[in-house]
Every structure is written in C-alpha cells, then in structure tokens.
Length: 153
Image 1 (cartoon, rainbow, N blue to C red):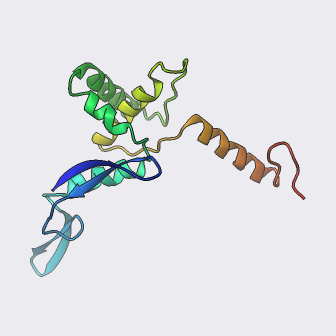
Image 2 (image 1 turned 90 degrees about the vertical axis):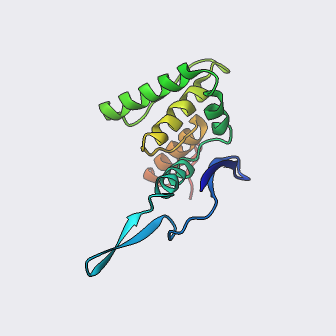
Image 3 (image 1 turned 90 degrees about the horizontal axis):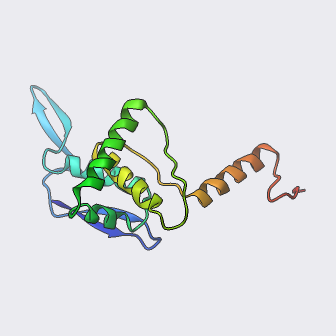
C-alpha cells in the first residue's frame, strides 16, 4: 500500500491509500492463547493513521506542493520540523502569522502543519475569514441571535 496525494472537489488536500492489504481496514486480529486481539496492521496501520489525521486537518489543496517543495531545499523542512517539535514541547495550542500579502505566511504554516502531522500530531487548518465568521456566529448565539449588527425577532 502507498499514500497518494489528492484533492477534493471543494479544494482540500487529502491522502488516499492505494493498494491492497490483508488486514481489516487497518486492523489485524492476533490470537493470543484463547483470545483474539485487534492490533494496528503492521503493513498499513501507520499510513492509515497519517491519512486520517491529514484528511481531518482540512489543509488547502496546495498543501501537497509544500511537501514537494521540500525535496530540493532541506532547510524549510528542518525548520518546520523544529517548530513542530517546539510547539509540542511547549504545549502551545495555536500559531498565528502576520504580514503583508504574498510573504509566505500560509506556506510556512502549511509546512509546520504537515511536519506536525508527520510527527503524529493532529490539527485543523483555519483561515482568518473562517475564524472571524465562526467567532461572529458564536457571539451571535450567546447574545440571543444578534448578527451583523441587527437584532432578529
């Protein structure tokens, strides 16, 4: 089995598993004494785990280009891995980048995100407009339906 980079019709990056494995959807049953135990498949379990975390992260479709860009220049990859390690050790729950348009904020964030996923972490990719929208909606719910500056009757 191998992981294939792909994208959804809604513009999200996904990883698909291609090939066959003798397991049952990532789990193998092992007999120990009188009982059967389910264990992560040694052949595809880690790939299924990574694909599941990657797909749940909702990264933009160009996330695969970030990973491909690391092959020529190792410095961005090692910097992203180092930052992911520091985030894990410090127990930070988020990272925000500020700057002018076209300065590489999303690219760097995506590099850190994919390094974090490779290291076994989980995340959700949230853009600033989506975050503000969600925040506004939650505030409106708390205030009893006030949204966009108008009271709902």
